[in-house]
Length: 244
Length: 265
Image (tube, rainbow over all chains, first blue to last red; front, side):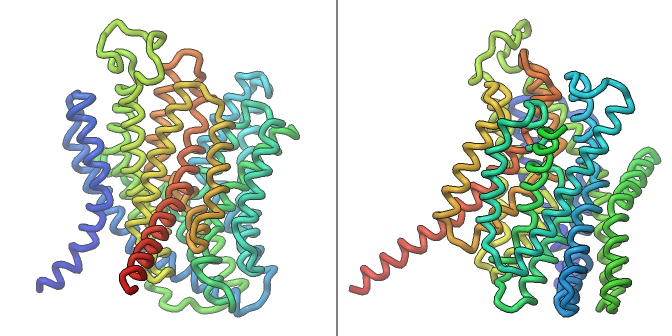
């Protein structure tokens, strides 16, 4: 009986622990620094409950759905032995999840508005919309090629840091060439591309591939795709800023 | 009550819309290319339902509880009247160190939100599973949380002082490259990955609110131009702290080994 009860409550306790730091930080600043009454305490409590339930369900779903599927597909691709289908899958996964990413839509829209106000593009609704969409395609292309490169790296066993550091060097070299307005946008584009559902899938794919290919170590070779996905968009957006 | 239900269903719907392209890609490749039966297909499907439901609840809850509070606090903390403790103060009279509460808030909230970031939880779970417990999920998350906190604080400092973003990023890159050659090899891929996973559902809205508040308060800053760049520093510093975390572990292990050897003699 106790064990059954614990098996139900334990995941919730885990989520509670995950959220505890936020409660402490918000409570501390609210009580000691800002010292303003908290508006709508009831809504915050209900919201907090929803966060706990949501996080618990999400983590359960990771273990049941996203992780096993990502790994099963990695195994299946490895058994099939067709690298080109694997590359197509990697690119589609990166491109398809990024083009619709809400955070990217928001950032691209803001970036286009900034460019229009700075007079770098025509200040018409059409021009702004086209620019925002182009930017989203550029970033999605970057993430697609990043996942592809990440998979290629796992297949070939290239050391990760050589590629990532080369990426950094490229970023450092082309930053001075890019117009000032695009630099901040480019650097942020790297951060907004990896969404909460893409990350577990890509991680499972990488680890699954590294474990099913002989001579690859899951911890050394399985991780790193997300790292590419956060550097590549910076390079692509900077290059886009230089060329356009 | 019904307003809350409306909100929940609209969040669920938008989560579903975000998952749709991913599901489509998985479906196409699974059934047209791989043509293999998924083991425990029902269980996997149920897992997807849990992920969508969970994320929907999570986001709706954040929208209800954390984001209004976070935005309010970011607004109040960057208000010059609050910062000086006087009502007639203007931003012009403030120097960079008068914003200490902002830096402290940035550090603390960055740490706390990164700990709760579902994408990071996922990577940490996988990492501890794959490394056989050498990298503990909780240790990795605390290291990333510290990095995110430092990154947001540095981002805030950058907006206040007006240091160009390029300099900060280059300095951080230099440190990352330097550490890469010193840190244990097995942590490097994980460290690089942890940069990208820090900024998603929980952290980005709070960071954006803080950046926007600061850039609006400080004279000569453009909210749209200077509001950007905060996410970039938040992504970079976790790489540094995760490698530091591994370096400290390695250093301790070496010291322990040296002590044991000395005792044996």
